[in-house]
Amino acid sequence: MADQTAVHGTTGMPGASRSSLMTSLGLVEGDLLTYLERHGATTLRRLIRESDWPAPMIMMGLGALIRQGLARALQHDLEVIVEPQPDRVPPSEQPVEPPGVWGG
Image 1 (cartoon, rainbow, N blue to C red):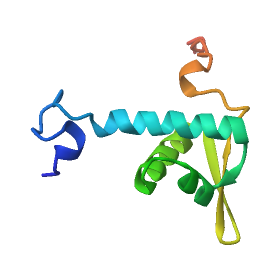
Image 2: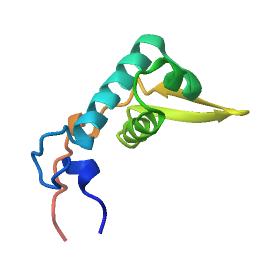
Image 3: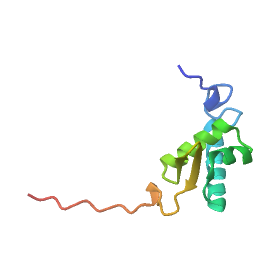
């Protein structure tokens, strides 16, 4: 079984005294998205160097932003370029298409 300490604090129970990984990860995502919106495309190396967050948290936060379609990462030689997706509408804000007419 996975160690729940990292997710739920020292007691392994939701609502434990320490903040959860999910809360920290959300903060990292917000910081990264704000940075990308202000500065545009940048290298992953620069994001890690200029952030106060540990590199593994930045990698997890960036992965979450990519999965949500809010950022993308491109390999360029030995660097990874990270950039925001300005024209992307998050899935929660996309219009819902009405169902088609059933008929036969």
